[in-house]
Length: 131
Image 1 (cartoon, rainbow, N blue to C red):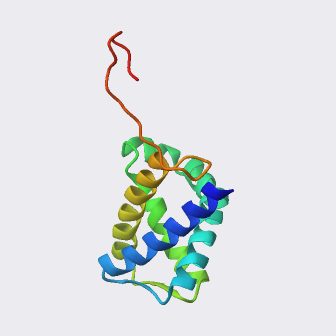
Image 2: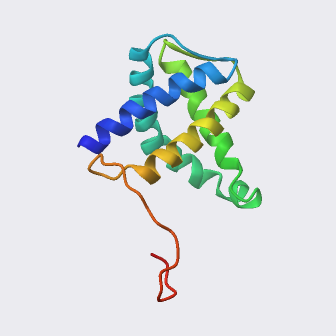
């Protein structure tokens, strides 16, 4: 539970960061960022898998790059539903989706389910196996 709350807080902060970095994306307050992060999590859990299945041939053809277009579409849906989040079009949504994907990847790779920060050593040990 602690890990979920920490990831939710970091997702809200990352939405605020994206609003500062990408012209065309605006989040009115931290409350709207937290609300948008929660709704984006629900969208990514329900709608995104359906879109991935429906667009699977296109995703395979583009070697997975079409997933960024799906993420941009999720941001555009988010701005239509949450009134405190404004996305100015497809290109700002695509830029925001790229940044959110990188931040989400970093967050999930360093924070475990219990909400603790982990350090993963990826060097080979003396037995020749990866740690």
